[in-house]
Amino acid sequence: MTPGQASSASDRSHRTGILCALTSSLGAGLATVVGKWNLEAVSPLLLSCMIFTTSTVILSVGYLPFRGLGRVFRLTRRGWFWMIMFTISSWVAILSFWAGVQRMDPSLAAFLNRTEVPIAILLGIIFLKERFTRRETVGALLSIAGIVIMKLTLRIEYSAGFWLVLLGSLFFGITEFISKIAVRHVEPVVLTYVRGLFLAAAYWAVLLSGGHSLEGLDQVWVGIVVLGILGPIMSRMMYLLALKRLALSKVAVISQSQPIFVIVTALLVLGQLPTPREMTGGLFVLAGCVLMIGAGRKNGIMARISQLGSGKR
Image 1 (tube, helix red, strand yellow):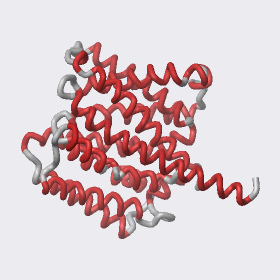
Image 2 (cartoon, helix red, strand yellow):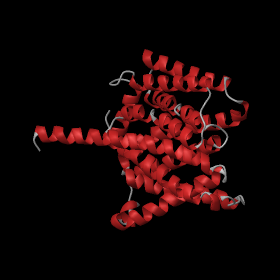
Image 3 (spheres, one colour):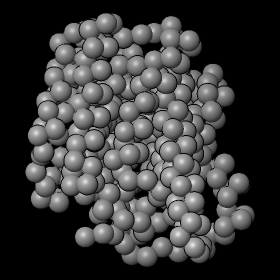
Image 4 (cartoon, helix red, strand yellow):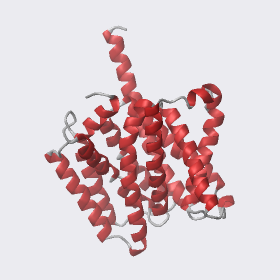
């Protein structure tokens, strides 16, 4: 391959990565609003269970015949380790997030969920022995200020949802840190499929062992199918494909557009919007996240996490 061809291939890969990241953000935004509608009839546990059952069935029919079961599950020890870690962190993050969304405005939940970025950066500090740059410090303070504003101005009926979404964000931050490493050892589609299969089995185990009801499922089955496509397939798989082609910092910046998709969709479909003060707090969180992600692109913490995922030292 000539230098010109290599450059052209790199440009195509970069454009594809950006498209995948935007598609992921759009899918996550739409999924949040559809999930809010579904949660009017079913519990967060049942919703989580059905999301991954649906996505597993779809990928089993549309992917396994071309890939083969043996090739999908033929992973290295490191691949299995990071797959399991990815699944465990996802299990807690997803269930907590949906439990929170059930109790609050989906647009506000989308803003609050962006705090996964400071969490991922904090993990970089802990595990990579990094220090905050000045811009990362300012960004962290902006994000914290945004969270405080959102909490102080929050409608009282949203209080429980606030803490549940924040808990979900903590584990989503852990998940994003793990996923950048996991995608180095496991192909994105395989990672999506196997994680979804494990999550579906785990959610079903809890659902059946606890005697939880399937009530309400008949009312929202169409929404469940749509959510199974939007969440694990459109959002998560596209995110992992983007990570394959772009640095984590760039994917993270693009993912900050998610609340915009949620706000527009929630307004059109549910007629819901955060209050001006809640919106202000959310914008503080977004501004802080973008500042932290963009701080010191070559030597910043997000850049170091990307290097860890790509195997550079």
